[in-house]
Image 1 (cartoon, rainbow, N blue to C red):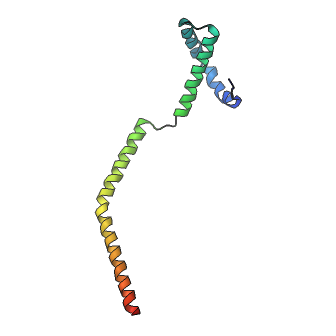
Image 2 (cartoon, rainbow, N blue to C red; image 1 turned 45 degrees about the horizontal axis):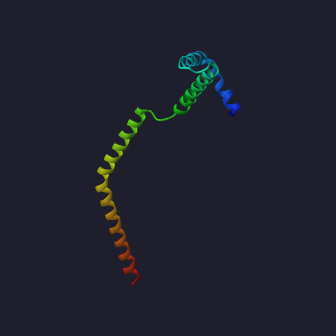
Image 3 (cartoon, one colour; image 1 turned 120 degrees about the vertical axis):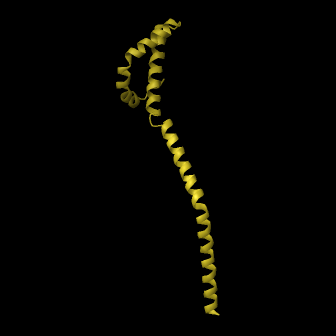
Length: 110
């Protein structure tokens, strides 16, 4: 298995602090029938994977963040529904103004 040296340098402080966890996991694997070397390797990999996933998932949105975003989207939808009749009226008035200006331009050039 190829090991990225830069990753290992970044993760070494985390791995060094997790030695008791690796030992406990290795003992559990040995109780389940694995030999000591394989158990230590599996335990180290499990701890490393857990720490990498924890780092990667730290920036994901939390449930509270998602709920806050849903509330904001609902509020925006309510504002849109409230403003929609006004926007339609403004568009109609704008089109009417354009038509009146076109008639004035055509009338003055005729």
